[in-house]
Length: 91
View 1 (cartoon, rainbow, N blue to C red):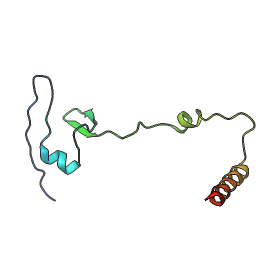
View 2 (view 1 turned 180 degrees about the horizontal axis):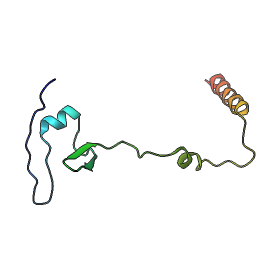
View 3 (view 1 turned 60 degrees about the vertical axis):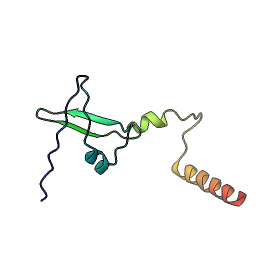
View 4 (view 1 turned 30 degrees about the horizontal axis):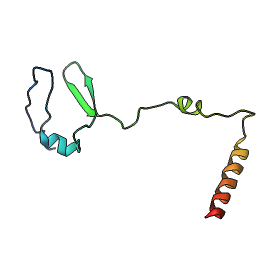
């Protein structure tokens, strides 16, 4: 197993830390990359933040407007097939 490379940086008077260039290059972190900072008892972990916030299905589906009775799976599949055929015939 390869030995981890020790790099040293300094905390500024504003509490800012500059990551060594080699770390940013290896992780492909460019200027403006958002990082999540996790505090642990004996260390601080930084990892890239996801591009989009994590959501639950109810958060997304509840925003879709629909009035009427719920559709069955067969009705949904038939609607998808009909739209695919309509879209294909249009091209």
